[in-house]
Amino acid sequence: MDFVGKALWYIETHFEDEFTLDEVANVAGISKFHFARTFGTCFGKSVIRYARERRLSEAAKQLADSDRSILDVALGSGYTSHEAFTRAFKAQFGVTPESIQKAGSTEAINLVEPLKMNETPTPATLDPRIESGDVMLLVGLKRRYSDATSALIPAQWQAFQPHIGNIERHIGTAAFGVMCNSDDEGNIDYFTAVEVSGFGDNTPELDAIRVPPQTYAVFDHDGHVLRCP
Image (tube, rainbow, N blue to C red):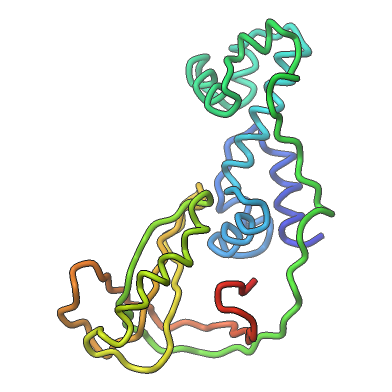
């Protein structure tokens, strides 16, 4: 079972409980940041969003197929009140829990069924080289993305292009994409940047970031820069 498969198994056996991205990543055996980005790339949504959608889908089935009260289903689904459950339910399905209970059917809504482990895209196998890097000072554009807006990252590179060659104390010939400050919902800060020898007076729209010494797994990629897996 690969790490995404392990995570899906954990989510399916625990989605009625509250859990954090750290817990799922620990089960998967990789870092929280790497797991969040991989899951979002594979499935188009964050881990926490998927778990919430699964939890509410199963709750909808219970409302349609049993005589349990809405409050009972809400509490069993991890919500602390009828009101909180109703807000989340309506946000996902566009209808109230009462309407599903009254209809005795979920045909009017789109349920989120379990993702199958054998449907998980298999990344291409690449052999990395391991390198140790010194501290890096980077200057560039920073924007925040969710799993729904990450497709806009190429546009950020286009916006950054005119700054390359016009940033004070620019060194080297490489440009860098840096992802950091992720949260449990899969939101991240993304930097498009170049390395500098020191932080000078650059335009107000540019941000600076200090990357501490790191050990890197370096993969060679000979395709289009915006189509790297």
